[in-house]
Length: 451
Image 1 (cartoon, rainbow, N blue to C red):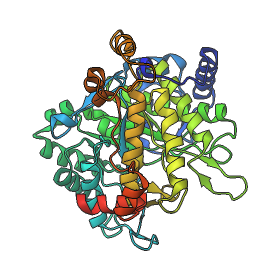
Image 2: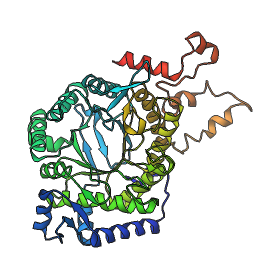
Image 3: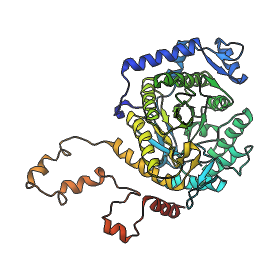
Image 4: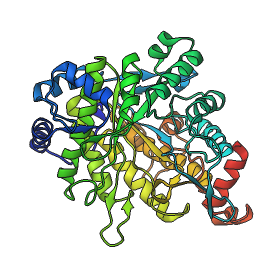
């Protein structure tokens, strides 16, 4: 969210103002549909215009006031202090998982249903990969009943990672209250839970100005000040206008309606503005995630949130490839790097996700850690000062000189040159002597080594 770390700007100030004004127009004159009476009763108490079918209309002044109440930055404490995440302070953080239903088999690359053991193993894996800052179970296990998944998910996080995480989404008041009770007990009390902000919840509206059951999680968590990530899922051409500007207006209006609700309930509740979308492929009818358009409107949304002062999570660095291959690598780099360069605070669905978000791969998780490391190095940029300009070192060397043995190299190489976790940089003869292993073989070995 910190504009000092924004290297890419696709929209002008005039463009951003047009999108903001169009958003306010939609919120005031068309409104947003809420299907749950719990949300409608809150808006009714606030005196907002509500139509019979549950459409709520938002005055521009109220929207602006709510935005101003959202903390511009906050710290999500890890279970260990070295894993604290500082949202909105100019750093970018990575994580994994969109709750895919399947796991790509490490040997056959066929997919199978995700199991509880996969949830545990992915949590352990993401905990040990250095470039991921959020710990979660990545997959939705098919062998855990929906009635207890929220409790099993929290237990898994507590047992297998020291990094901050999201709890399971809540679609009923009882489920949300149970979650808060469990989190409070695990955190040493409700006050400690609110203070540390280790946990957050994701609330997903039905894309297109409509909120369903997930609004309950937003309401109950906002009451106690737990961070709420409001995630819209636009798909230009199907679930949103085909133009990217129109998609931004629709998603922005939908997310801001949730922001208003959260701040009415509890002003100052931490909010993260999240997008997890793609496009409609007009040839096949599929919802494709890893597209240039996704990268563009994600970066534009980051710019918009920099104006609002709301931390961001651009959550679409998945791949449409079915297996961990070259397509997966270039798609993930494209869809992650662009919003990262725009200044996104976090990108949490990079790790391990394939197949339109339906499948996860252990090997891809390790490869994605490498991609995240490369992006983090790019974001680190480089300093230009008297020392780094190296004028004295250049002058003391011969023409065509060699710099390996210079004191300047010794002083700065560790801080300047990125060291890969997985990539091969050996000469061919050494690579062949070590078994001619491609990146998938090396990733598989890393998975076994870690787990």
